[in-house]
Image 1 (spheres, rainbow, N blue to C red):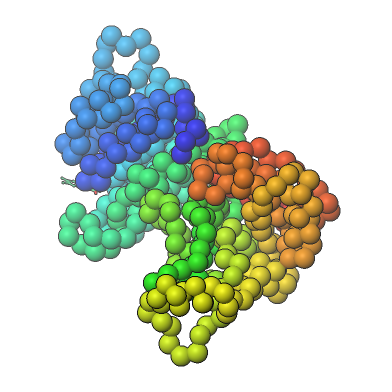
Image 2: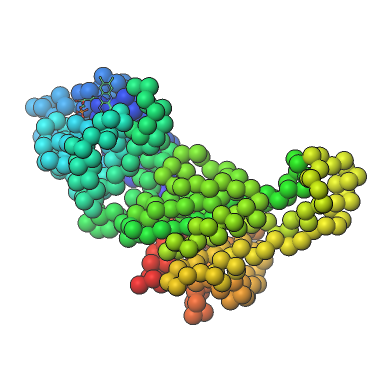
Length: 420
Ligand SMILES: Cc1cc2nc3c(=O)[nH]c(=O)nc-3n(C[C@H](O)[C@H](O)[C@H](O)COP(=O)(O)O)c2cc1C
């Protein structure tokens, strides 16, 4: 999350779940991203993760309940920490700490700090599946979701430390870091976290497609899929339920948590998958870099591996244009569905704008983000993107190069305005 967390004051708190062994990874990632980090542990968490490790990684003392009762402190520690924090991350959040929090019980440093802070709070629950499914925990989790300043991160499924396979694993530190950056980008003056996509179904395509030449070789492009995956996560973190149809990605696996992923390889498979998911979507965000050409399927079975001579021959004949997925999709969209497209182009600003306008009209989407791929430090494979956003009434908005997560939120804001 290069740049987005730099200089931000983040308090990381761990409560008594075995997932606290992953808290040092989160602290380390936040510090590497340039955040100022302070750590708090509950008494149980201090049994499970070393406060010394957290102090070392955060370059600050790791604070515990005993520090709250220090007569040398001129101000109450929980108030000082609450006022210092721009964001509090509770990772992991145990069943007990959740219960204390939603019932307004301030016993202990973490509990009193959570009641005192007015900044946004990210809370990543972690516990055994039976504990998680217990009606009392579910009621408390539901109560937590009512707080506009809190972004609760559901536990994931998988193998738990208690040997059970089920829901209960804490969100990955990489996912929590992403959510932290997203919350800091999208919080209003009173600390409320944007949930304006709640109840919406968003369909996103991301990454390149690969068109097979033979059984081993493919024609593809250098798209990493970052822009699409971050668009999908931005929508999810603002409350949407998200399907992501993607080609081969070069993003951390943790960035896919919480998305319904449909991995595909070819443009035809991507088209089929989008076909099925499109009817129920409120918005379709076409960020994938679909290949332009594919081999005309040879008669019979695909050659497992052509010789170099056969390959040269094949390159000279038997090619066809890949169908225009964005155009097809926009053409058959149901009433009220919003469609955003991306166009990766090279050349002068004038050329990009005129090609972009042609594409917006020919494809029939609501918004088209024209992003140059020949400027250093932005576009394909980069963490930054920028360009021009073209709208239906000839509007042109210049978007300076910025982190792809920031651009994703900006584009979601523009779509919300169109829907209003
Ligand atoms: C080894 C061990 C692992 C535990 N793991 C969890 C857990 O994953 N989630 C949870 O809610 N409680 C877990 N507990 C129970 C909590 O630590 C216990 O409820 C404690 O009171 C939590 O207090 P705290 O929220 O103040 O840290 C675990 C306990 C032990 C001994």
